[in-house]
Structures are given as structure tokens and as C-alpha cells.
Image (cartoon, rainbow, N blue to C red; front, side, top):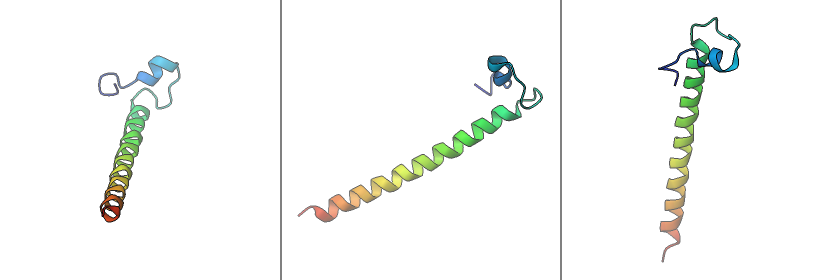
Length: 59
């Protein structure tokens, strides 16, 4: 959404946190991207642990 409408915060909420240049919106995108990568890494680690435990406990 930010790529198509870089000032969506101003349009939706009526306040201007970044002076209308779209910086606040891109920070939101960056933070959410970091959170997504971290969540994926944690999920992958958990999957490895579960698979390792399953292979050890299988007779």
C-alpha cells in the first residue's frame, strides 16, 4: 500500500507525522519486514527442534 500511496497515514488519520513525505509509512514497512523475518527464523528454528526430537524419540 505504501508503494502506491506513500502518504496513506495522512489520508486515513488526518495527521502528518512526517511532513507529507512518506517517511513514516516506509518506517512502518521496514519494521514489519524485520518482524516478519524474525518470526520466520523463529518458526524455522522451532521446526528443526520438533523434527530433531521426533527423530530421536522414534524407535
